[in-house]
Length: 405
Image (cartoon, rainbow, N blue to C red; front, top):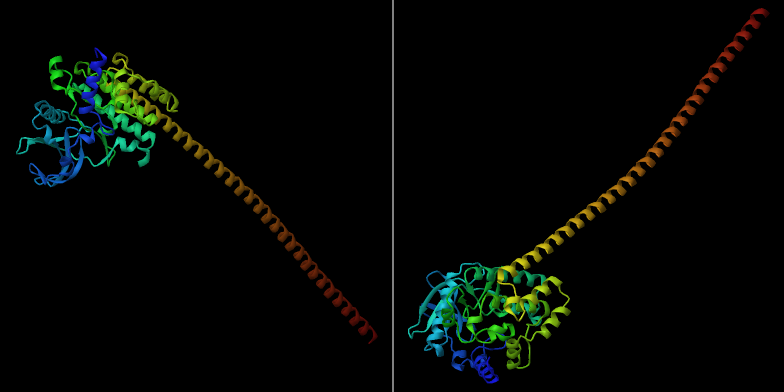
């Protein structure tokens, strides 16, 4: 900004058109009839319900009668139907999403116009929750390791986007959906543009202001499309990581103007203090700080570098977990072996004791049997001797009687 007056003029314009708490859209700027009215159908699609409303578009859950499935349809708000710039940006959003082929980027099925000329496009319906919901402690904050896994998938998706020559321009937890199968979807491409274009084309293809100040890079908050590059998205990634680690985005305040001015001037003392005190892994804290550097040149050049660092961190965690698992298995095996050895020792001791007892009993019975046999033999001998003596005595008596006769 060239002066305080210019800064205030831009601030007023910015807050009027772009800023909102929560999802980056001023809910009080929605007309009451737009809030209440849900059309019976959009083009050929019967409307089931309203999914969400933004500053520029409204998203409906609809039925696809031809394919028998539910899809989402985004419709430009009727009050902007005559705004040629917003109509162009709306169509550009659909075109960019249709060109980008990645599992984490919503698939566009069709683009069309209503009878009154209002543009719309149909896209994949993502059943799930936003990353913002996963971060909300009142809804049961997800475990940090799960949030880091989601963040890694976001980085991979934006790395693909940057490789394709596109800048998203509004990365924040509200624009990330996590599906029922933990698939990540990057939503809301209304501020995206192709960075490979000439400077003039980029300026023309961008809205005059955009993004969400709580997550916004300083160069973005200044309202100059020329300064928006892949490094601006890197700042957005850092802002998401900051909220994952600390529970709050980089810029917070009681007033919207306060948050915006903090973003515009790159005031990060509070964010840095929260990061240093959060107790997270120093590598993640360092990555967040590098991504959030107010000077774009000091940030990683693109999302690929951020994704690589996150992938290395996750790989190290997995390796550590694998080693801990191996140690646990080895410790369990050692304990099992020790228990088996103790059981074997006890079993052997029992066998020895039993063997001794059996041997003793056998010896006892053998000795008892021998004694019994000796007694029996002695009885037989004694009986034989007695019988012989009796016979001798009888013989002697017979001789004496014969002599007398």
